Image (cartoon, rainbow, N blue to C red; front, side, top):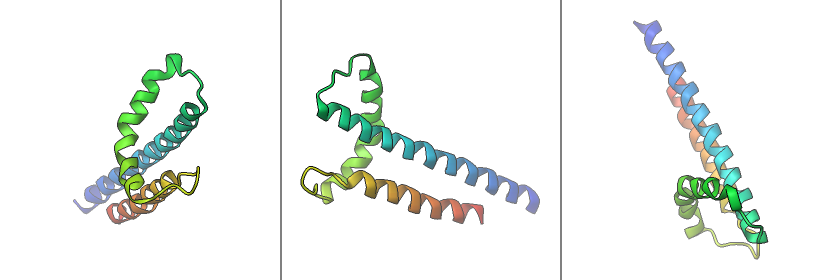
Length: 98
């Protein structure tokens, strides 16, 4: 029974780790999207991708943008969000893994 529980914990930790990686990539995609939109380039056929990124990452980013003001033209809230995802998520994965 203990072996099964340990295996399940390892599998869940691996799954959570994968989710954290995917969400980190989505945050980076959201940053690239904001650069594209700020430059005035027509999004055209990529509009559904941009809408997806906004709907998935936007609410999480708004948590940080509410409290972290931009430093001139630079918005550091995505960096803080990535740190929270990586450090906080890493702690959760470590706790689950055991």
